[in-house]
Image (cartoon, rainbow, N blue to C red; front, side):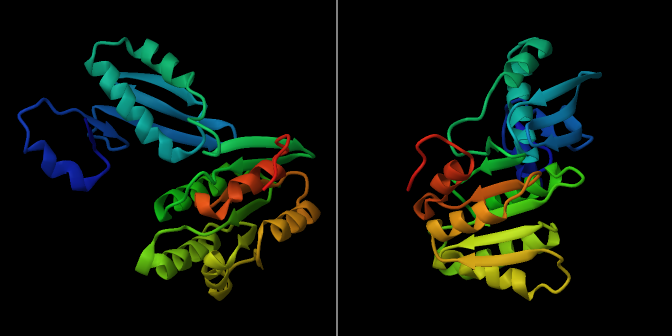
Amino acid sequence: MLNADDGRVAAMAGMTAARVRWFGLSPDADVRAENVRATAFGTRFTLLVDGAEHEVALRILGEHHVSNALAALTVARELGVPIERAIAAIEAVPRAERWRMEVLQPGGGITVINDAYNASPDSTAAALKTLAQIREPGQRTVAVLGEMAELGEYAHEEHDRLGRLVVRLNIGKLVVVGEGARRIHAAAGLEGSWDGESVFVPDLDAAYDLLREQLRAGDVVLVKSSKSARLRFLGDKLGGVEGAEW
């Protein structure tokens, strides 16, 4: 099974004697998605396969999970599983585990997306894009970002890139937590066309105090960092998880 949206894998098709099936958003894919819609409570898309259309509603948050769903549906199809049965099974899948795009609603009209189990440049960019996509009219988006660890010589470059991405996505407010992530705050501040606000705080306590004071009804808050930055516990506390501490 090969992703038709990834040009890097095209050469693989000619290197195998196995039957090749393609999935993705490309019109050439055997199993294809279109009309992808992301909300704070899941991701929907239209599945096109074998000349028929099917509506699919994932409970998993984020447009980037559509490719995973298509891969699973393609495998099921090849194994002879009826497509309706495969769709029903994939729609029943909840979040994979704690702190991975976990939606929390602490009350007061605030939604917290706790995705701070781990973080890489790609996963953080995908989470930020999801945050921007799910914003409803009148809602403010808030990104709470900590360090992406173990990037070595690329750390400055990748944190800088995320700060600029926050601006390009027009996120309403950015809160950067900890010295290891300060570059995100600096990069956002260098972008001059942004109506949002970036704030740097040194630690979890300062972040919690700031957000508790400034969050308001309608806010959608993304919390994202590597595990070592411990922002997953901040996300729990903001999200009203009982007993959440750091």
